[in-house]
Image 1 (tube, rainbow, N blue to C red):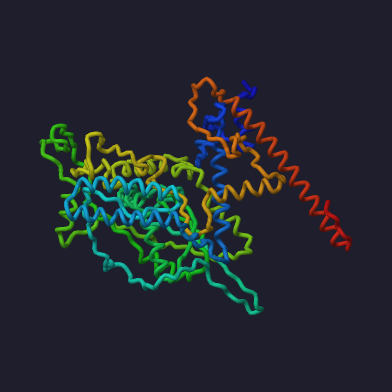
Image 2 (spheres, rainbow, N blue to C red):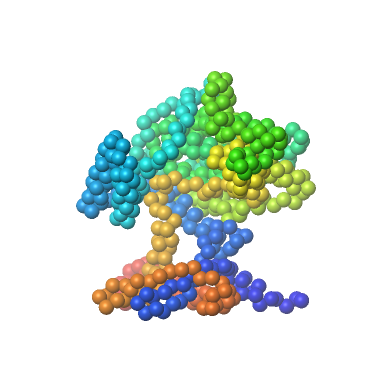
Amino acid sequence: MLMPLAADVVKDMATEYGVCLRPIGLRRTDLATGQTEIIDVPCGATREDKCVPCAKRARRLRKTQIREGWHRADEPAPAPNPATEEQRSLISLRAHLEYFRDQAVRESKWDEVGEVDEAIREVEEAIAAEGLRGTVAPAHSKHEEPKRQRSTRRRQDAPALPRQKVQPRTVGRVYTAPDGTEHRPSMWLTMTLDSYGPVREDGSPLDPSRYDYRRAAWDAITFPRLLDRFWQNLRRCVGWNVQYAGCVEPQRRLAPHAHFAIRGTIPRTVLREVAAATYHQVWWPRVDAPTCRPVWDADAEVWCDADGLPLQTWDEALDAIDADPDAEPAHVIRFGKHVDARGVAADSKDIDRTVGYITKYITKSAADCHIVTTDRQRAHLERLWQELRVTPCSERCANWLLYGIQPKKAHGKLRPGNCKGKVHQRATLGIGGRRILVSRDWSGKTLADHRHDARAWVKALLGVSGGVDQVPVTESDDGTPAPVAWELAKPNDPDMPPMRHRLLRALAQRMQWRNALNAARDRAAQYDGVLSATHNNGEEVQRG
């Protein structure tokens, strides 16, 4: 029994060399020759409990993205390319179709309206295929619901914030030292939520009966909206397009908090004032404790209470809020008093340590960020999760049925108290959205661009022009690549090799790549050493 298992050794070596443990098999069919082959692609998981190599690769990519955009001295976002004549002609055709549709609607020619709508759909598909981003105009919907208007006036208990016109710049301020040198420092910011009750060092509450689990659940679900509101307020306050990159993770008390790298510097007083003045209101029906046991009426297609009476619809519940002049939001979320902001210079030794701290837990689920060892911690986690299970997460959440309200677009497949939203899962602790938050103009690149840069660096070091894992392409008679078809291969397909065969093949390939990369690094280091030695001796170096 002390002898190691061969399968475990294969997985351990695959993890060591960065080979995906659960690759996705794709069947590539050459339509010119009919030849098929199975090509494995990484699963792309971002959590270590699913695939450790892919999660580590994703973490390195995020660290590179944060590091490249943190202390930029130039604007990263290039201006879009001008539109081509084909794109402009398609937009012109789309405009004429919109004009003809409006005329048909005015004259009540509904047959022509349907024909024009079909033509509009085809033109918009051609516009997307031509290379234009976004949509030209919103779709024409027959059942457009009127949007509810909410007052934008600030709450009386919230401090006022100055508002300036946001300049289009994203880089920070330049400071000039007495000796004439210029510095462009940046910042690192940490923001937390308010307290729900005193806690111990392990994060468990001192008195669970007085710990506000309901407010903790509401805050965890609405925390992403509070962050969006903070960056909006901060940009309006300072007057320039502040860029950020960070992550959301739970504290030891299981409440979410956020770490951000900010490009440029902002006074700490301003950051604290904006955080104190930022809030988010949730204008939903107020709920207390789940008391309703709804039953679906298949004939009437409505949810009813125990007496057979239909439950209040979502629109009726919102209409009651709008009709009440003294109505209060169901929940108001604010930041806590703890706002930690520190300056980080571009040449500081703390950059790598800070980037590592920001991305420390991104490969773990929220519930696994902190190890639970005591019964108090387990009870605290269980109590918070039970509260998250019954807290509504959206307008269409099935949990509204527990409070006597039919959610928006209710149907008979809903299960009261069993919403499928990620915020209700035990592993998320209410953090159901994206845990990595990066502003649009942070590095000027997408994750695909950063992957391409990594591949380009490897190919330049190895001195190869093609890809190290390039798939052979068959050319047609005219010299163009032959068309190919891709489909997902099933595990029980006859041409699908066993998983361990695929892992061994990928492991051997990755070992060959690593040996070649290490040899190229040694040659580059040796060449740099020769250059530095000959340069110090004043001798000339001839490049072979």
